[in-house]
Amino acid sequence: MSSKLRRVLKRTFLLSVASCLLLTLSPSFSNCTEPSAPTPEINDPLISIIIPVYNIKPHYLKKCLNSVTGQSFKRIEIICVDDGSTDGSLKILEKHAEKDKRIIVIHQKNQGPSAARNTGIDQALKSNSKYVLFVDADDILAKHACEILFAAAEEDDNIDIVGFNFQIFPAKWFWHWWTDLQDETYKNDLDACISTIAVKCLYPLCDKLYRKDILKEVKFIDGISFSEDICFNLMVFPRIRWMKCIADTFYFYRVDNPNSLTGKTKKRKRHNDTLRIMKCVCADWRKLGLLNRHKNILLSLLVNRINQCRYPDRDYTSDFIDAFGEDIFNANTVRKLPKDTQKKLRTLCKQWSIQNP
Image (cartoon, rainbow, N blue to C red; front, side, top):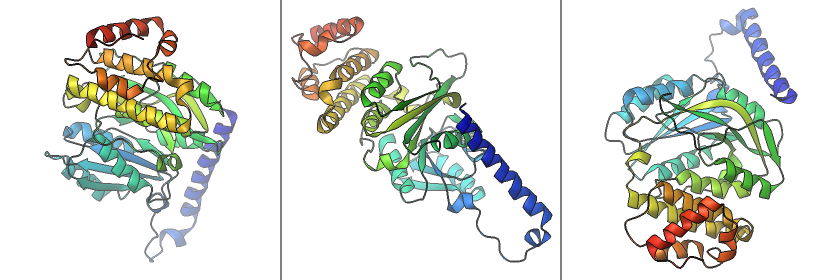
């Protein structure tokens, strides 16, 4: 932890202690008959936590909400978007909202996780918060997560994202496709940032605190329910200034939920979403003038994602070429791909009767 971060945390702690002493030593404050003013954490949140909710097991949802409301950092708002749940999820949200006024419950008809998160972003943009944190309704946030992440983000006004580590649970599961983060900061070097992020597979939503201002330009693509986090982050990364990474683990990602949308998404839907993601990202990067420099990253990502989903049961030739365009899908780009990715691409081309570039 840097010395500046320690100073920020120390200052926050001392202010809290001073406030407690003032209230203890001043009877006029404690015995005041006037209605007390709303606590600052309700009216002046600094972090908006967005939780999309759809048919979550009660004990999963309650644990998630307890982990968020129990944060040591109190100046948060908790935006729960019920995406047309047909079980008791909405009632659980409303019951928790009665106890904690920082919880905002929004109910909408079922539109999928992307639309639910967009609703949450729209709500967050109405408040005075500075940062956004995404939490899934069956996961758990470490108690001091918001406190330490806020202090890290406030170290410099140029920091747009604070990345941190997450851990899957239950522990019996072995699923580790990412690279653990270390304490480092990417400053004003977009090429290095994008390349490093791609190598370390830093695509999830759950391991980042976002400066809210950058979300005014980027939203989730409605209708995409598989790898929507990849699409979102690949459009966020080119718009950031600095990204700070810290080695702490603050998020616990549940992988044993039988109702998880990721696990239930059918193979054809996965491929359709993957190709649509690549088409959207390519269009965005082309608009920003980044596509030619980083097209090998996108092509490698697409091939690996399709390989993870298993090869499709229909011909995606036109969709594949349409997603990238001839300026990406060519021999020069393919030669720059890792050898194992080139092998996967050759298998794909053979499967779909595409001429291997």
